[in-house]
Image 1 (cartoon, rainbow, N blue to C red):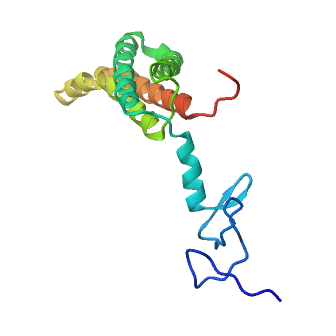
Image 2 (cartoon, helix red, strand yellow):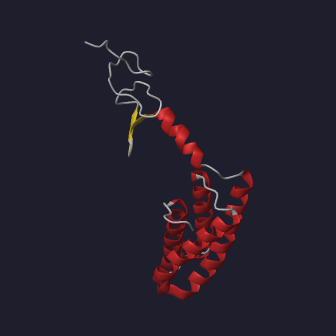
Image 3 (tube, rainbow, N blue to C red):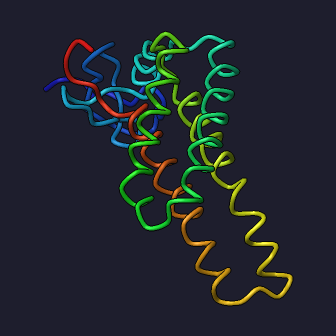
Length: 172
């Protein structure tokens, strides 16, 4: 009979499970299920940092490019109405590709989130005037005018974020 083994982080918990990367004993609370087996949280955290390649300037450039392009696309979106349903995801994808080009295709979850905020701010610029006119006593027509900028903002923001953070297959 082999001696009892205990979790490296919780010495009071008996376990037979080991991290498949560092061979440390881990309990089910410390285990992270990956496609290749169970790993400890420290190994998972260390592995994810390999993919964080963005540099400080990338955050500034990404935010600026996304804000300006989203503002321009929002300006166009405020004039085309219903067709924004088709064009906003395209605008979000174009913004994401422009950010990729400016940042040298470097990656960071914080960068992707910051770009999404910039796209949303660029689109919300057109929501504010309509929203204020509704508050000032505008009618149902102004309420309908609010729909398109909000729809642009939601669709373009989500498209840009998922285009940046999604898995890319191939050598592009």
